[in-house]
Length: 208
Length: 208
DNA sequence: ATCAAACTAGACTGTCCAGTACTATATGTC
DNA sequence: GACATATAGTACTGGACAGTCTAGTTTGAT
Image 1 (cartoon, protein in one colour):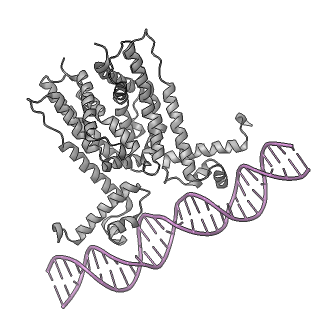
Image 2 (image 1 turned 90 degrees about the horizontal axis):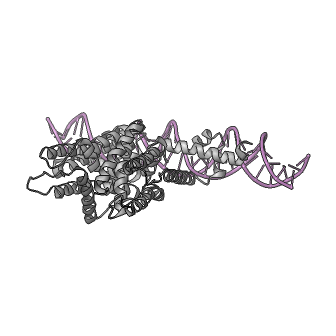
Image 3 (image 1 turned 180 degrees about the horizontal axis):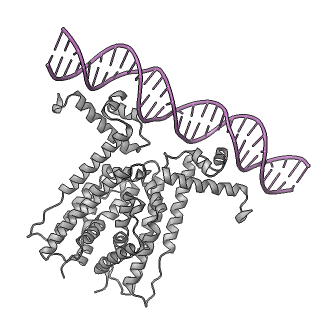
């Protein structure tokens, strides 16, 4: 039996995978449970055996995706080596975050959650906490550390973190949110964009 | 007859107003035409006399709101007076934009359009064009002008415009998008936020 | 006053869909 | 091999909803 999963576990996973696809493609109201059953090659009964309701399934999927994405972003945070050029380090930092977030899946997840703010405010809150808020908290910690080493001049580390985060993320994220996946920039463009953001950031927060 | 409108025109407007409310509250799929008819105190037949379909009504409403909002933002652009302090001028610029965009209606409109990117990509495109893109074009023109007077040091005016725009707009807009209207900052907070953004902007683009 | 166009009220069609019921088959554990 | 549980397949219930139809009323221009 593949990957040590028994039948029930395989079905469970198949349903989650199918539902993820369908919800992302069609939205919450635009999705119907028959499609999910069909795509997961499972009977509708089985779907309801594994998940209490459409709503419960939706919440579970979105919560899980948001957490996984937040962890991925967090894992990509590069470690600063004293020998390294600070600007290059920050450019790389920004680039890593951009390249995780600017994927069709995560952009669509963000659209989905934003479109359902009224119906599922908890989900939007979770996305905010595990997304931008968490990213900015890490940044603030990094900046505090760098300021301690005299490499940055930072008054309020959270404000500096917000400035860095949005200088780098805001433009591409907001453009892609509205214009769709074709607007996802190529890696070179992302690098250039990160460099420009870092230049501005360092003009305000760099030493001297 | 009030405001020079005959019956037909009054009904037309009543339907638009009601539909705006209902679509903003419930989303596209979550809205039904009976609710719109009831709220506009009009028979369902009349709704279909004035608008071809739910889809057509939706498109008309969103397009119109987006245009009006874009014009409002544009009208709020302050004129720079040579005598004035540049920082104060830019803070005011940013604050004006923030205070137009950060309203429950416009935030909900943005959520609605983003949630419907797959179904109505044209609407999202229109929002992008008449929203951030137009705002940034105005900013770029302003910066080119200011650079011509030696008040700013700007290499690429569009890049500078993007930096200014997102330094000021990104943090509150993205937070409110996810956390809802209760997260709309008070005017003093918006001012403070604009000041901080302008400080960073001028560190990078101010002269000397 | 006349008349066409706009409107009301409510029934109706056709379709979609969340969730359930039922019967038969497959799986895995003892 | 026996037995509980999971699953398939498919039909069904009940409600929602876009859009139409019909018959009678109101409005406003001539």
